[in-house]
Length: 556
Image (cartoon, rainbow, N blue to C red; front, top):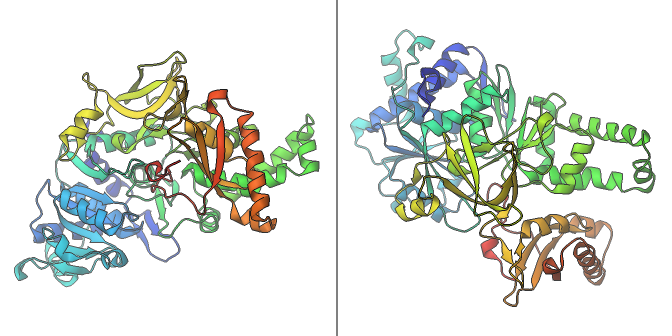
C-alpha cells in the first residue's frame, strides 16, 4: 500500500491545484472553454457544496456518463476529493445498460449529457436524488425537498456565503482519506458480454499517477489530447489524472475521434505524448503508408542499402509531423498492435511503444519507453508496483498471465462469485490473457484464454494471430476467425469497401481476391491453423469502446 503523504491520491490533487494555480488545466477542444487550475478548483468547490446540499456522504456513489468535457473532469475530481465513489459510465453503453449500472451501483446522483438522458426513463432509476447536466451543470431532475435545492442559483449563493472574500488556493483543502478506501467503480465493457463493476481503490489510481510522473509521461507544461473515453481506465489514468497531477494541460475531444479530427487536433495542440489504441495507427498505416511503399519504384528503393534510409526517413518525418511533431512517444494500449505495422514503424525508428493493462488494474501492468522496447512485447512489468507470473505454461512457455501489486482491484461490486473466480487461492489476479514472459520481465501476449481454440489434435490456436495476418491482405478492413463444430476454421472478413469501390471490383472479383488471400495466409500458417473458407461480412464488427471485437456475438 502506498502510504507516504505525497502518494495519497486526494493530496496529489490538493497539492497540484495549489502549485499550478495560474496554469491552464483543461480545454474543451474546438471551443473557447479553457479552465485554469484555479477555476477548476473553484468549480470542484461548488460541486462539493452541491453534494453537501444533497446530503451526499463519504462513500456514497456518484455516476457520470457522457463524452469528454470539462464538466466530466470536474465531476470526477469533485467526487474523489469529497470522499464519494465515482462511477464512470461509458457513453457508448445502451440506455438499458446505463440504467442497470446506476441502479446496481446504488448511485445517489447522476451527471449526464442531455442527449443521453433523453433515452432514459427517470422512473427506471428511482433511487437517484438528482440528475444534473454535463452540458452546463443545470439540474435536469430533482427528488430532493425544497430546502435541499441544488439548482445553480442556490449553489452560487452558498458559494458566495462560504467564500465572501473569494476562493483562494488556501481554500483547497480536501477530505482526509486513506488510499485503501474505494475510489471508483468502473463497469467493464469486455468481449464476453458480461459487464462487471470493478472496485478500484484510491491506491490503484495513485500508483498509475505516480508511475506516469516517475517515468516522464507527464510533467509540468505537458500537453495531452484526450480522445480516448475518460470513462475508460486507460485514458482516465494518463490523459487526465496523471496529466493534471503534474501541472499539465489536457485538451478534451468530445466528438467521435475520426482521423481528420485527430490529425487537426495534433497539429494545433502539438501533444507531448500520445495515448492511442492500435486501430488508429493501423488505419494510418494502411491508408497512408502501405500504398506508398508498395509502389514499384519505392518498393525497389527500399531493398537498396543506404537508399532505403532516405525514403524511410522521409516517411518518418511525414508521420511525426502528422502527430504534431513535438511528442516524446506514442503509447499503444487496449489490444495488441498488428505485427507488420509494428515492424515497419520500428524500422523507420518511429517513437512507438506498447503497454499492457486492464480495467482491473486501473489500468497499467507493463510499459517500457520506446527506446528500450522489445519487438512484439507489451513492455516490462512495472518495477516496484506490479508483479507477474505465467501460470500453467505449455511446452512453448505460453500460459495465463497472472498479476498482483499496487494497481489491483478489490474485486467486482456485489459479485462475490465473479471475484472469487478472478483470483487464485494465493491472491494473484487472473488476467485471462495468454502469453509468455522473458527473464527481464517483458510480457508477450498470444491471445485471450477464452478465445483460444483447439486444433484437431489438441494444438493451441490463437485466432488473434491469424486475424492479424488476414488484416494485412488486400481489400480487408477487419476479420474474425471462428471455429465450426467439426474443428474447421472460418474467417469472417469485412471488406475495405472504400478500396473496393475505388478499384471498381465486382462481387465475383472480390470473392476471387479473398480466395487468393486465404491461400496466401494459409501459406504462413501451420497445418492445424488453416483457414477453410473466407466468408464476406457486410459491415464492421461490433466493438467495445477500446475497439476489441465482441466475439461472443458471432458464429462460424
